[in-house]
Image (cartoon, rainbow, N blue to C red; front, side, top):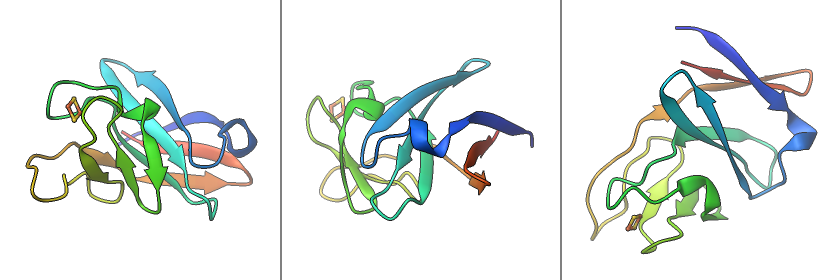
Length: 101
Ligand code: FES
């Protein structure tokens, strides 16, 4: 695994997502209201919606296209919908945000 720098914490607006592209992987990085940072694949398992543009609520993001609710900790889609996206470990060190890829 590689630790990839994706930006400064203050560049991430709270409860908003940001897409970062690492190699061929599109990753949605989110700063939660308590300043923890989460990262999941930026491709909804339903119809490839851009999850970085979704609405964050607590530890979930709602897909902007059809409102699938996705857990930002493990990438699982909330029932009654199904599916999952890859979740990535994140590290914040001295306000520098990294994703483990
Ligand atoms: S593409 Fe995400 S819910 Fe349909």
